[in-house]
Length: 204
Image (tube, rainbow, N blue to C red; front, top):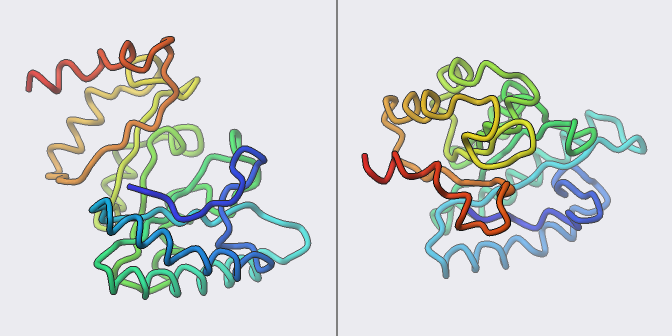
C-alpha cells in the first residue's frame, strides 16, 4: 500500500479529498502517485478523505470527496490500481469525516466505482467502535487492505488489549490473500526489537 498526497500530516492534515479548496492540488498530484505505484508494483493507494471543516457543510465536503475519489479511481483503474478508503479514529486525528466502518462503507457505495474499496485499520476501529471480528465479517466483501497496531499506544500487536492471535486467525480463516500492514509505533528503541510478535506466524 501507498498513499495519495494527504497534505501536511505533521501539521494536522488527514487527507485532502473532502476539502473543496484543495481539490485542484489533490488532482494535480494523482498522476505522480499512480506513477510511483506503478514503478513499485504497488496495486493499491489510500486516498484519505480528511477532516470536517466548519466553513463548509458536511454535505458539501462529502460531495467534494465523492467527486475527487471517483475522478482518481477512474485514472487508477487505467493503471490496474485500487483506491482505498479508510476510516480514522477521531481521538487521535480530530474531527474526521469518516470515523466508522459503516460510514466508510457507505461512502464507498456512493462513489460506485469497482476499484474503490475499504482499508480496514484494526487500531483505528478498536478505538472508534470495537467488535472487530463481527465488523470484518459484515464488510468483508468491501475490504481490500488491512492494517494492525495495538491499543493503547499504537504499538506492535501483543502490547495492548486486542487479541491478535484470534483476530489474525479469524482473518486467515476467511481466506484473506492480501497484505497486512504493520502500521504501528514500536514500543522498543529499535524497530527490529519490536518484531517478536511475528515469530509464531513465521513458524506457521
